[in-house]
Structures are given as C-alpha cells and as structure tokens.
Length: 173
Image (cartoon, rainbow, N blue to C red; front, top):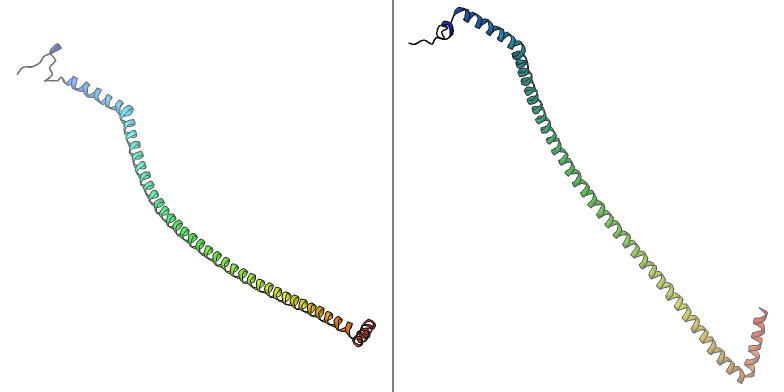
C-alpha cells in the first residue's frame, strides 16, 4: 500500500486528531449558522408551503362541493323553469281556447241578433207594403167608384139631389 503524502507529512488515510477536532468544530459552526440562516427559513417555508397546499386542497374540495351543490340547484331551477314553461304554455292554450270559444259565442249571438233584426225589418217592410197596397187598392176603388157615381149622377137627377144632400150633411159634421 502506498500512502499519499502531501505537504508536511499530511496523510489522507491517517487524519490528525487536531484536524478531526477542527473539522468537527467548523462543521458544527457551519451547521449551526446554516441551521439558523438557511435550514430554519427553509423548514418554515416548507411548512408554510405544506399548509398552503393543504389549504388549496381544502379550498378545491369545498369548491367541488359547492359546484356540486350549484349543479344540483341548477338542475332544480331548470326543472322548475321547464315546469313553469309547461304551465304557461298550458294556460296560454286554455286562454286561447276560451277566447276563441267566447268569440264564437259572441259571433253566434250577433248573427242571431242580426237575423232577428232582419226578420223584423222584413216583417215591417211586408206590413208596410201590404198597407201601402191596401191603401192604393182602396184609392183605386174610390176613384173607380167616384167615376161610376159621377157617371150615374149625370144621368139621373134624383141621385144628384141625394149626393148634394149628403155633401151638405158632411160639411155640417
């Protein structure tokens, strides 16, 4: 075995107890300094990161639960909206049918009233025409009778005296 010998009899394979002591002291000092300046902030940072991750996971879980609740609420609202839509459509159809029925009934009543009025008008016209025809026939009969009576009166003097007497009686009444 060959030993590596460096400056002043220093051997890597056989360390000096003083070197071991100082190496240990320096190591402990470095460890304490690093512990206070680096390890503690790193450890606190890791703890903070761990708690942040846990908080984020908890928040995500709450968000998922809330989204689930919202989805169920949305489904309920959608069902309610569909039911309301169906109800509104049903009511609109009923209103439309009632309106159509009412309009048909009103139209029937108006038509019946118009027919009754037309029948009344026709009856009045018929009576007026009948009365008018009777009056005309009466006037014609009177004209004919007057002409016949005049002709008779011209030929007969007795009748003439009777007619004169009747005319005088009519004037006095």
